[in-house]
Amino acid sequence: MKNQSLGSVRRSFSPWTNPEAKPFIRFEGVTKIFDGTAAIDDLSLNVFEREFFALLGASGSGKSTLLRLLAGFERPTSGRIILDGEDMTGIAPHRRPINMMFQSYALFPHMNVEANIAFGLKQDGVARSERDDRVAEVLKLVKLEKYGKRKPHQLSGGQQQRVALARSLVKRPKVLLLDEPLGALDKKLREETQFELTDLQYELGMTFIMVTHDQEEAMTMADRIAVMGDGRILQIGTPPEIYEAPRSRFVADFIGTVNIFDGKVTNRNGDRLTVETDSGYALKIDANGENAVGTAVGDRVSYAVRPEKLKISSKALEGPNVISGEVWEIAYIGDMTSFHLKLDDGNIIRVSMVNSARSSPMQLTWDDRAWVCFEPDAGLLLTG
Image 1 (cartoon, rainbow, N blue to C red):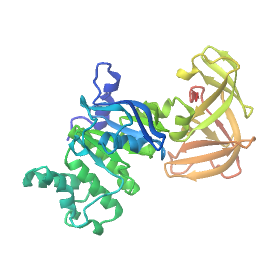
Image 2: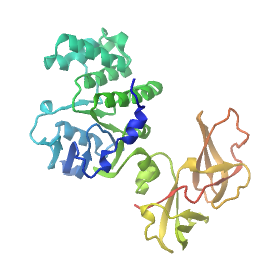
Image 3: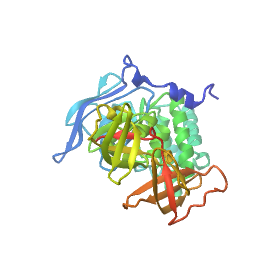
Image 4: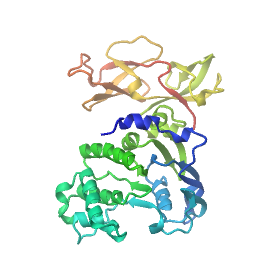
């Protein structure tokens, strides 16, 4: 058992904040063009040794192409990729200290699970006793200890994906690339495996780079996240930075759920702004974040507030930012309830309420009038 929890270790791990720290992987002005279109567009990125890094984006954002460039399955049209001080240009995929888990399982149908996992070790000449130990270790990690003698066709899709994951981990490469690694697992097993993977990554001292479109997965597992769009990196940061301090409207809207109020600044008193929204509400907000620098009266702005930052009530509320509307949708999710309120102008805002008690004293239902409010520092000004 470790002397420290993984959480405390991860909080203290931040080499990207140290100007003296040397990146383990560097993408330097990398561009990849397919049929005249840039899948990766002049991208530069640093990843540090032992980091769990996530590339997060929608389909077509370029995240899988970036992974394939690092693995050597594609060559950059221009730019360089440096790994541990060595230029990867011209180095064949099998000679790179990298392993990759593909979205397709690519298991050998004639081999059982143990043989599939051990195949790479056997090719490398690893002794039989060590092979057996390492195969047993990863089988336990992915909860397939009882399935070692089965063939791939005797496994479910989720079990096959776990075998592929085990095969990628067993060689303990310097860098493990994960392309949507947990997509085929059921929700409960996926959540368990997320923490097991981060534990294993820490214990083995490996660098993980993961591609995913699952925001919750990226937020749970990664030390840092790069949000990608159109072959470019739109923002890099820790999960709290990405969620609480998005630098653009796109990132705020892509990560989680957000309410965005568009309007015009009608007053500025120090760090407090009054914004007249397009819906006719006068919001009092703090001019926080880098986007607030230089914001003046008359400027058009957007203000983003997460649903959990809003308070909701069946009675009129008092406060700096009170908005009322009609309960349009209700989703009971177990640990929380999500409300969609339709404002008088037809716009929808979303509010999340934690279900801290077994029964809520507030009995809001469809078509009821409800009031929400939020503090001036609850959200963030956005640009872009």
